[in-house]
Length: 272
Ligand code: DGL
Image (cartoon, rainbow, N blue to C red; front, side, top):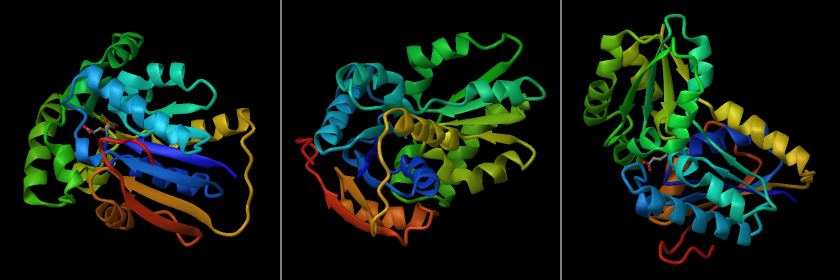
């Protein structure tokens, strides 16, 4: 029986989990939201690396056969470290889709909305350095958005105002393509479309991440065993019941075949 761990600083990784439940419904899932410590995007690279590794270690100890680091910030700062430590299981990360965006942008003008930590990271800047110089990127840290999303204020006037402020430099520059470089941001899609207009292409990598997970499961010959209901365990370091209610609100995939449970875990002890 395949158990897949999905980890994020909070509810953002539910956007990746949703896609995984849609593309790969015949597995069991363990979703870990470190909401007591969100946002990660304004923390130091060392803190993010250490915390992300200890959570992934716990997911591996709990029997996960593959782990999706469903957080751009944790991927940028920790994925090499996690892969080097947990060598026997596939670790799949998420990165802002700047390469597909550069290829698809007609004007060569791309906006990137991500956390400050992601935009400052060596990994992001190294990726940027591999892209052709004729594409211009307007980068913007989405400071303050993650706490609003974590508290469920997806349509609040405060959220719209902050998002409008962050997107203004991109609107002024006239971008035609926008990369969502944080897994929390797809939950703001209606507001983003409203502010940017439907002609702007939005690049979100969740489908590609799950296709990569599927490839890794195949490569590692992780079996699918379709017997009865699958299980989905939602773990939060802040409040399991709240994570459960947000998941019920945010997930769009068919949950009928999943037995869903939730639990609050002690943020100080990464044991699951
Ligand atoms: N969802 C995360 C990401 O993709 C991190 C958000 C945060 O905790 O700052 O970057």
